[in-house]
Length: 111
Length: 112
Image (tube, rainbow over all chains, first blue to last red; front, top):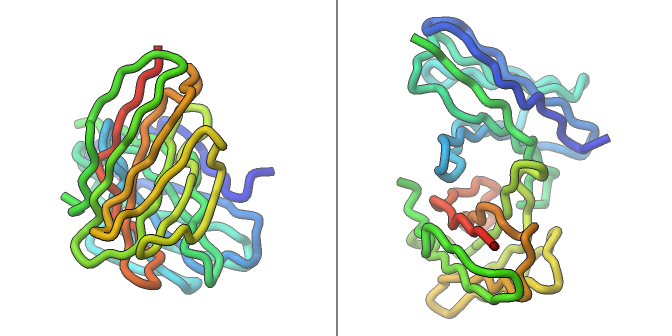
């Protein structure tokens, strides 16, 4: 079992839909959680960063962490074609600055 | 634009050859990280440098080496290249004690 599991997709949704992207992890020592967005042929770009269980909101993006279930989610409201990209979760243990990345989920938002 | 620069953008070379990839971190960032991204392996951590010193090592092959110079730029050297080394190589940087990493645009390496 990989430390961080992420469905590669692709996930195809119509413009305006609410998107849910998810990762599961196995290591209870993981303490910080991040979501990166990567456009084709570009480097990953940090979207959200959180330490705690619960929700964190930033504009149309909400990151949700459930440490008891070892499950994290990224919700995108009112999705736009410009949101079409690969979304990678990244999870790390306290004291380590090297997160473990999921394989990424490809999202396609069609007009 | 993350502020991290990488050169070259593209590199095509032959098996057995040696190449050098270069990275300049964001202004003020002391840590540099190197990653390899391939379709079958995803984003794999290779090595981290902090202020010129090696800080952490990941899945880096013995044929690969890196260093960070006094001006904080870093180079990743790949030698005895194999077809399987074809991938995107990313550099990222972070501030002191920062888990948050900022990625460069990557170098696409193709080994023929």
